[in-house]
Image (cartoon, rainbow over all chains, first blue to last red; front, side, top):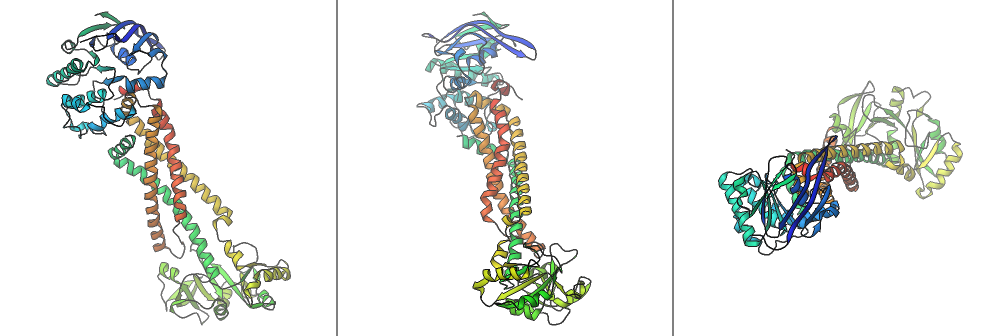
Length: 226
Length: 367
């Protein structure tokens, strides 16, 4: 459950993309506050701006205007290099398509995220996280030898290995069957409840959103319901 | 961890990696074979000149080129009369039509034996009759010539009397007079060069000076050490330029191969690069990764190239040892490796920059 001050603070956030000669207004004044330790679901139709919000919060894209604070860091002021460091240390990503590196084993997929952040050793207690995820016996396999559910759990481990301030999950169950979806969502909820991990999850699925503490709805680049 | 990713990437695309390294290897082999061939041919010529036993060479010009029958044979008697000259022997060199870089050498066999200390015969006897022919081991191997065989050269039937070790005078040795008659150099008697033996080899420089003075520009006297030193790549500007051109081509080919390989790798791995960027890989990390892959390609290619160069040498020496001589050039291994590496690094620059500039969001949505 949520507690304490906001770890994500977004006010009047605008994002405009230039596509050819047309300006696309992906975000039109988003205001959002996420307390530390909250599990928040963001739902909305395609094109509502969910992914753009996800990309800005994760430091993958700069905002056009407005204020974005993630764990006290003002994202408007960050250079490209500083946004890269934000991705290394403060943000963990979980993608719909898992996005594991096919050439590496599960263990090395996790290790490379740690290595890119400048650490070559596992954080203390990470073995328990791997046990919670149920992948500790599958770490020496490459992604092609893992089921979708296992791949997504490896991706969750990779997102957690640098002990990020926030975990951003973009449709984490979008490619999974019901059983695996439930398993992944329960893991996310357990992580949130047991270790107080702040999670922001984008989903189309109201059943998936029901696992979160709170749900916000987006449409046309704005938050229309909390 | 980056090294592990590089190795896993290479293993994952093993066939392409090996093909790419093979092409880099062929480039390295071409360089090593060209240098080995150039040096082998020059060393072979130098050894044969050294094998004559002459202290001084007299030729129409000051370079290692030879022209058939440019010297009046009367100069031999003139030189023989000079102080400290123990022996002067005239030689005629005639290229063999239709054969690559092969010439037939005519000398007075008895005089040349005295000058050189004799041919080192593997089989048979030195020429004693006008139509006798002595061949060296390489010519015998390449043309399958045996002692006692009648062999046609310059539209003339020769009797092969012996097979000698390589490294004395030339591949083919016949009596001077017969060669002069066959090639229109008998009347007046003309030759290509004069070999001079001194009674005191320590006085070579003084004797060269003396001969050049008395010959008044009609011939040029060159001491054996000076003459032999001309048989090096650095003393033949045309060969040096040719080598530079081949090296430049090799760098270009290496660049193109690695460029193409890395460019396709970057396009193929767009999503993978997007993942790495999302995980916090900096542009330098991405470039570093591709550069390391290119270095592996260059190093593996270089090893393949060195192995191939031994194969090329063996093949050339087995098929045409008389026409082409190749030596192993280990001193050029690091140079060829550096050339391969330079081509590979040049080839990695643009794909590396393209990968580093890749937008992570676009890359992650790449299918």
